[in-house]
Amino acid sequence: MTASAPSPYAKQARELQRQAVLTASPAALLVMLYDRLLADLARAHDHLAAGRRAEAGEQLSHAQEIIGALSTSLRPELWDGAENLQAIYTYVSSTLLRAGSTLDPALVAECTECLEPLRDAWAEAAAAGHGRG
Image (cartoon, rainbow, N blue to C red; front, side, top):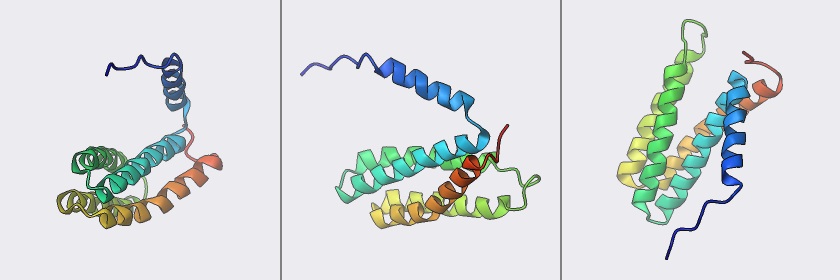
């Protein structure tokens, strides 16, 4: 079977996505990161539930990268809540490592439950115009 040619719209879609990222407010960028993180976790959960370890590992690895980026972006000197958020990121990171080693989709679901309210809070902030610039 031969590989199919990319859609003529794929390049346009990538460019639109790139422009959305380049022009987004900091709060909107956080929402985009959380959206991707939650999508990775949903896929990892489904792969683990279906016994597809390699595919789950790829999703968990990418989720870990995003958690790392979110964690390193925290500025405790500028925000009192940063330490609490750091603790959540540390917990999620270690739980995702356990999920990958034990192949337990329930651990991924637990992480999703921790992160969804954070994503929603950032989405509200972005919609209210907070976090611009």
